[in-house]
Length: 196
Image (cartoon, rainbow, N blue to C red; front, side):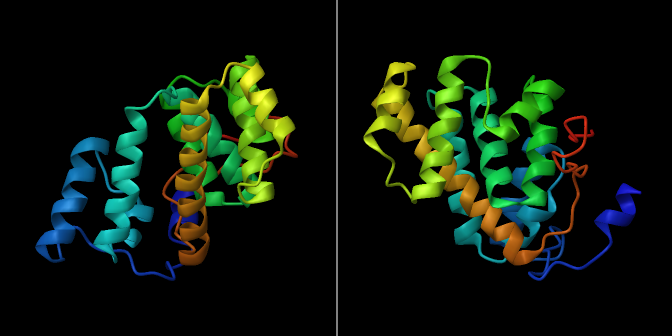
């Protein structure tokens, strides 16, 4: 079933074959394969522009060394993808979320903008406000974030994570990237829908 979904359509931006491309693209894609064990379709499509792929990879790598935890970054990614309606990113971040220790309930709650701990809940509230206001969040939202323990560094990193995820959401919607992650079912379902 999932194989049928993967092959259902062609990407509107051609996927680069890592073995049949120029040296620049091949080096980028080989680095991804070494790190992830494979090259996801999004990155194969994004490799049409080595500059764009480098922006994505560099920003992601820098955020990995920041103050947000891997779980928090995935929760922000899930909320952003849910708000932007990006099926590809929802599938990818449900799978990656499980890899970094998020359970089904946490995946579902993250998509809804909820979290058990007040700091992550404030990050998800800030995520939603950033998207809704295009960065023009209210003083009240910032005050709530600060009251929950988000200092200026964390607030800035939440913004960076949201921007990175908006980039991938919009890219995948523009490209209509074929799914190569399990599909995340709509939230109307009883379970999370993040089937891996």
